[in-house]
Image 1 (cartoon, rainbow, N blue to C red):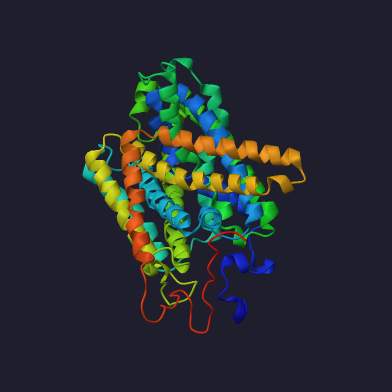
Image 2 (cartoon, rainbow, N blue to C red):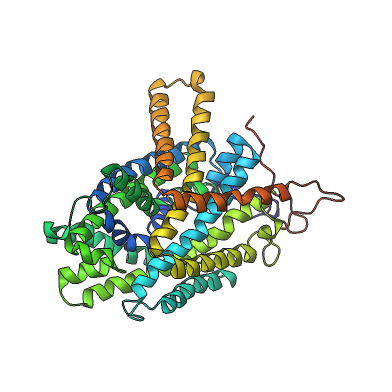
Length: 473
């Protein structure tokens, strides 16, 4: 990279510096969507019974609508940033800030959920009595070990990431194929076991199921690193989401049909229980648990970095506290220590509070992270709809225009549906944490006196990151 290029944000990098082709971008989407959380999802959905699979199908349709919407947005704005950039370009700085703030909450709350799911598989080997403080200690190790790796500046080696992706994909793929041959209808239980209406059960289960698709937007977030992003980002987003959808739906159905319903409700490692029932004994289930543990560390390592990268991007635009833009060594390639530490501390606090106060630890954290993820999804869909309305009369391909409007409206409606399915308590806590960002925004936009502070991420002699316009021209 030439000195003149070093100050450029990823969106301005020349094509030869964009290292992701279509396969790598698709792998990024798949690797981001499939975390440890999906390994605990059947237990979280079990209280609703097989009707949860109906919710899963509806969520999959909505997720695919979101994937297509993000693809269209990437065609229009192919630079890095994803939901944050789309919100800022369409609705201005405040919308961009709230979107970045909400996504940041999703990232560290999601890490807490991943850590809780990870604990369930660690406890296949240790703390088998599931003592609360033992579980808390294991979860904290799961959160802080990846944070330490990121803090010393060791980025996940590509081979390690590929290996962890394969390890978490294999148990899911096994259950989605071979597991279907061992289904027993008697294990499924009552179709609607929730005790509520069918609509209420589908809405509640759908809000939980959406957690399994968080990450479908990652190709658009990293679009500046993708070759030919207008072509490859939309394809990678849809292909990756489709691949995960098939594995998720069939794998969850297989677990429902191989583990008795009353046992599945209380299981901390449902895929281990399912494989044990298929193979007999415990050796096969232990292999699944080991794979889930390794893949969980890989997922936590990647999402810990995302917890720091999103606020760092917003901080460089003046829309997050400047401390988040500071990196060790003062260069753009340094370690964003403040973002890593703050996100891990918050995830740790949420984990401790959840284990000591919530009866359904994983479910409660999942609902919080889903709610805060839906806000960026909803704003992104609204940004796409606004763009379609603005250029509606000038669109030469009327058929594609009608299709894009239909898909975008579906994505928008799905986002609203996901919010109401989260439950009143989750909406209260979620909106409270999101609205806490308003005082932060006011503080950031307060009048400054004296000389303007330099961009903390720019080294001497390098240009600061150019700010995005408040509105598209």
